[in-house]
Every structure is written in C-alpha cells, then in structure tokens.
Length: 332
Image 1 (cartoon, one colour):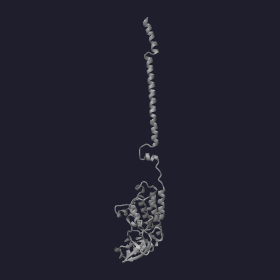
Image 2 (spheres, rainbow, N blue to C red; image 1 turned 90 degrees about the horizontal axis):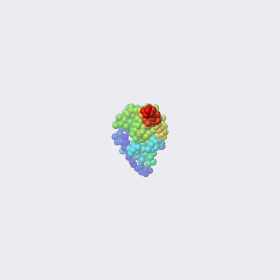
Image 3 (cartoon, one colour; image 1 turned 180 degrees about the vertical axis):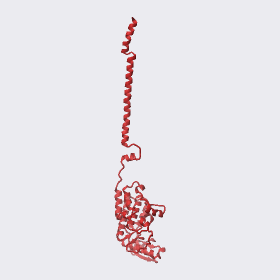
Image 4 (cartoon, rainbow, N blue to C red; image 1 turned 180 degrees about the horizontal axis):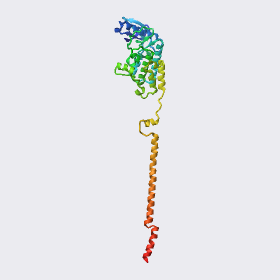
C-alpha cells in the first residue's frame, strides 16, 4: 500500500521511518481511510512493548504519511533468509510477538497479517510488530467487502482464506505458522504458488515438524496440532499460551528408544536379543553334546574291539590257554 523511507527528524535529531501511501492509492477514498486507520490502530498501541511506535500522522503533496520509529536491526524475515536460528532466539522473538498481539487483541485490534517481514528488530534484537495496514479495529467502519481476502498466503488462516472476518484466533494461527518456520526452517504449507499455499491452509493436513527436522521433540507436533487447527476455537486461548506450550515442548527431551526397538524393529523377522542369546546358548551346547556322543561311540567301538580280541585270539592270555591243549595233543 505504500513506500517506506528512512528520514531525519530535524527537531529531535533522530532517524525515523516514514511510510507514505502509494500514489496509485492516494486518490482512493477507501485506501486513504484504511491507511489512516492503520495509523490510529498503531497509535493506540504505541505505549505497548514490542509494537512499532507512531510519532505523527501527516500529509505531503496530497499523500498521507505516518512517521514511526526507525528500527535498525532489520526484520525476522531477513534473519530467516540467512539461515536457521537457535531455538532460544526463536522463542524470544515469538514471546515478544505474542505480547504485542495479546495487547492488540485486548484493545480490539486484529493484525490480520502476522509474518516475519512485519516483525522488525531493534539494535538489541527485540521484536517490534509493525504494519497494521490491514488491521481491523473494533468500532471502525468495515472497509473490506465481504469475501475479500486480505493477508499473505504463506501465513493466512483458513477462515481468512475463505474470505471470512479475521479474529484474534486468526493472528494466533499466523503466529503458529511463523513458529513452525522458525523451528523447522520452512513454512508448514509451502507451495509453488500463493494460490496453492492458501488452499493448503484450507484443506491440507497439518505436517509433522519432526518429519521436517527429526531432531525436534515429538511433543512439538501436539502444540502445532492446536496452533494450526482449522477450527479457530481449537487454537490456544492467547498468543502467550501458544509460546509457553512451544517452550515446554522444546524442553521435553524425547524418550530414548528401548534397545530392542533399535536392534530389531517390530516388523523385522530377526530374533530379539533375548532369543538370540538363548539360541547362542543352545548352539554353544551342541558341540559339547556331540563330543559326548562321539566319546560314547568311541568307547563302544573300543569295547567291541576288545571283545573281538578275546573271541578270535590275538596273543592275549586267553588265546594262549586255548592253544596249549592243541600243542600237547600234537606232541603225543
């Protein structure tokens, strides 16, 4: 809807950000009203932590503008483009965002476009939520035609994708998408086109974070089942609750697999370690049994041989006793 410039406040000698409504919208009454509403919504939250502060609302050459604090740390989007961030850092950013969203919801304001590009960072790395340009404030005139889809496809809630009014639960859904991206490195329903991604938010099953990154604890998927639920009523009650659930899940170490599961999966036909041990013992007894049998056979053979010697004569005393009479008879 506009362009953002870095400028200098000559009165206070400080850098500021100036958002100017794009020229193609400056002549549209609806766009001007929405732009002004952004300024009012942000100004109502300016005193809240983790929200971009609005200093002034004015016009220049017939174009409305908003003067805001300048944040020199870039955005969470830019940090993500540089690569994965530590879980502790991700939780800190999510906690800052949750505080700002809960404060906005308490004031009747729904952001409707929560995404990494709208999470700006100060020099200390603290998040400040920006761009309430499509926010809806209770009590303000509705400027959106029924069925109009507002938001960013990668982070849009199912109800917004259907053209239904956004609620605080819609912002919590988007925060869940941001959390999934921060912790796994990719959006849960990333698609080739914005259209396919928006339809995935509507119809696709919630992907498992552990399938994207197996090092993550399984408890995290339970949290995402709630945060990314198609039914807004099934989502966490507050953004802070969502972040707390994520923190607790990450602190839950996965239970180690039992040794039998690692050595022998249930679907495998390989014998379990216990059965293998029994079989090894069984096999180890076989040589000893064979030796015993062989020993008995050898003893039997020797016994038979001795018996044969006694029976047939082979120089033993018994044979000599039988031949002596034959010799005496021969001499007579």
